Amino acid sequence: MPFADPDLQEPPMTVIDTTTADFAVLAARCDGRVLTPQHPDYDTARGAFNVTVDQRPAAVVFPIHEGDVAAVVAFAAEAGLQVAAQGTGHNAGPLGDLGATILLRTNAMKGVEIDAAQRTVRVGAGVVWEDVIGPAAAAGLATLHGSSPDVGVVGYCLGGGMGWYARKFGLAANHVTAIELVTADGKHLRATHEQEAELFWALRGGGGNFGVVTAIELRLFPVTEVYAGVLFFDASRAAEVLHAWNALLPGLPEEMTSVGRLLQMPPAPDVPLPLRGRSFVVIEAAYLGSRTGGEALLAPLRALGPDVDTFAMLPPEELAELHMDPRDPMPVASAHALLDALPADGIDALLAAAGPDANSPLVSVELRHTGGALARSADHHGARDTLPGSLALFALGVPADPAAGAAVAAGLAAVSAALEPWAVGFYPNFVEQPFATERAFRAETWARLRAVKAARDPEDRFRGNHPAGPQR
Ligand SMILES: Cc1cc2nc3c(=O)[nH]c(=O)nc-3n(C[C@H](O)[C@H](O)[C@H](O)COP(=O)(O)OP(=O)(O)OC[C@H]3O[C@@H](n4cnc5c(N)ncnc54)[C@H](O)[C@@H]3O)c2cc1C
Image (cartoon, rainbow, N blue to C red; front, side):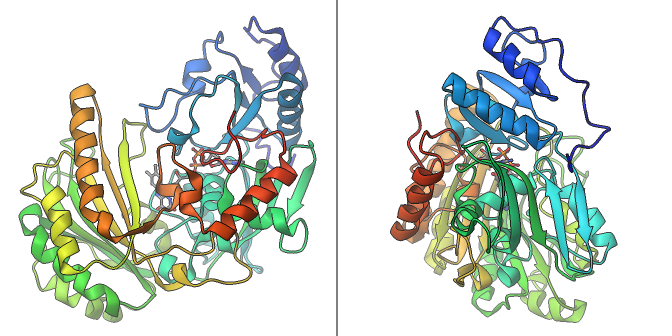
């Protein structure tokens, strides 16, 4: 049980308030908790990050080691159920009806083991990025985490993983060195470039469709300081700022990954006073280089006179907060597309849909600069080899009630329609609704993923958020 943190272990489950005898059988085989809909903790246990997602699985299981995971998979096979693994529920939206599915929440499968000499880290399935970033930094190393500190390492990496160093180092999935998982036949395997190579390829981008991951190993990078920060301008300056940023992109080195963003800060008490309740156009960036180098790259934007400028040399752990992602569960509706480089017309189209005069209800509309290493194919990469295009759009609103929901849906549709002429694909980690997964892959990659699914999970036991096989 290498990843069973004793502090997190619950006592062996003896009291299961369930009327379903079958789940009592499962509970007797598991050290972790098994909660059916009758259990008072079921509603808390089934919660997703996006509170509009009302997942109601047949049962929720909290395994504490791989033996529990194997027990769940075997039980699901006996009972004709599916298994959906979930770390944090950050991408629960696409999963759909879970009435015949056991939701396997990996929260208790913690454990972070850093090998500083090899520059690798091995983490349990329930580890989130903030569990790794600090210990890695203490060893003088950085991880390829994304914008949110509490996204799960496993879910992020299985979908691709695009973070602040993405243009330099590429997707996190392509720096995974080993994945341990329980497969449909109940075996606990280790997949690497050398062992189970085809399964290893499929997992790195093909998501949770091939088994339940119990641990993952990743490369770390010798980064101890980054020039990074945020420029805040009043939203009324969106056109000049976004045009200036967009014009800079072709000349930026891969060492810089940046984001251009329209942001409406909520009037919430945890938002700092100068920003609270205000609308901004924001440029965020991280540069793997010196302060003087970073300053030179950003000089044309600084010359526009931001209201707030937070750029400084930062330790890598501070990058996890740069994007100001929310931590608490909240209602979310979002839209996404990968885009080709935008001409000035494209920026104008975005501003017409979501700029300061559009009366848009969207809280955040961001364009992440991609390209660089994200666009370079390599033989050792997994199924998520590259991301097409030069930009990743992610727009979100808060559908707090039905009226807000309708307004947010219209706002998202307006942004999507405005940028549709430049859309070139999808990045599954940014897709938060059910969609046809093949739209995110090249035809030959999709055929290969389907073949691995058919060979390794012919009964479609594993329900990934973005399915690679028939969903029952
Ligand atoms: C606030 C926020 C910020 C984000 N920022 C970024 C970012 O900067 N870059 C980026 O690339 N993405 C980002 N994402 C997207 C994120 O990477 C995906 O939502 C990812 O799927 C989340 O993984 P999770 O484990 O936290 O979520 P979950 O919903 O728990 O898992 C998502 C899926 O991963 C699979 N999975 C999870 N654990 C296992 C397991 N143990 N075994 C098998 N399959 C498993 C399952 O298919 C599951 O449905 C962000 C999302 C949010 C909500």
